[in-house]
Length: 266
Ligand SMILES: Nc1ncnc2c1ncn2[C@@H]1O[C@H](COP(=O)(O)OP(=O)(O)O)[C@@H](O)[C@H]1O
Ligand SMILES: [Mg+2]
Image 1: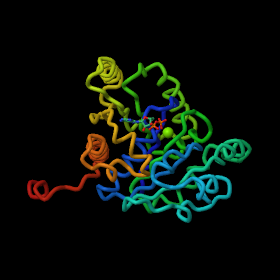
Image 2 (image 1 turned 45 degrees about the vertical axis):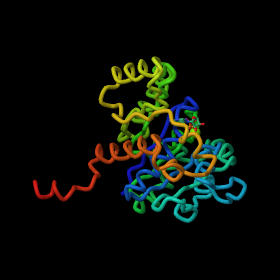
Image 3 (image 1 turned 90 degrees about the horizontal axis):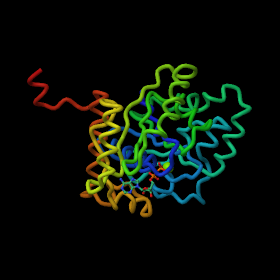
């Protein structure tokens, strides 16, 4: 059964979509079956994976409003093992329509139950808000990854998100975990970057991923080619960082294959 992970931070431009695309692609390259859900009406993950937004006919909107099975609309991507449920600007309207629906916080959960057996991971890319779509994503999820930009004093803004997570844990989804805080856009030359890393580690300790995502131009270029960085430049720092993140995630979840050597030792 798939582990469902939401990428959330109500601040924009912190690396949610970059992480959603490249972590999903890296997990797929490590032979996991992955579904990426683009739950942001801006549809950056959809275009970043090479889909023309004008040709998208069915999106997550139809799964929410018309109860279409996500399986029926999942698009295959260029990366083997990675499927996408695209987004559409209509999703702005869905958030309003959902307000009057029964169980309005659990609509994603009901939709994803239909595909949970087909994947190892389902990643949900969210918009920078704490609106009903994000509440739906968190209610459907096993855990949340919180990207934190290291070029900015980030802790203040995190309070609101952590509070929302607490409310969801107490009212809607008691099993929601924080998978980890992910430090992004790290620049070794910047004092501020180092200070933020120190501050976030001091505060959240083992909840912070060991892997840090460095600022890398290949990561910002790749979406304009409609590719994850692994297909844009496999030798780049960005590819290396996101593959390491995928490995760390698998290790934390004890989902790595046991090597032949380890089998002999055990
Ligand atoms: N590690 C990185 N190195 C360089 N550019 C990055 C990196 N991470 C994100 N970016 C760029 O920063 C911008 C914001 O990132 P994005 O992932 O879209 O943030 P969010 O989804 O949180 O709004 C995008 O233009 C993206 O290409
Ligand atoms: Mg985004």
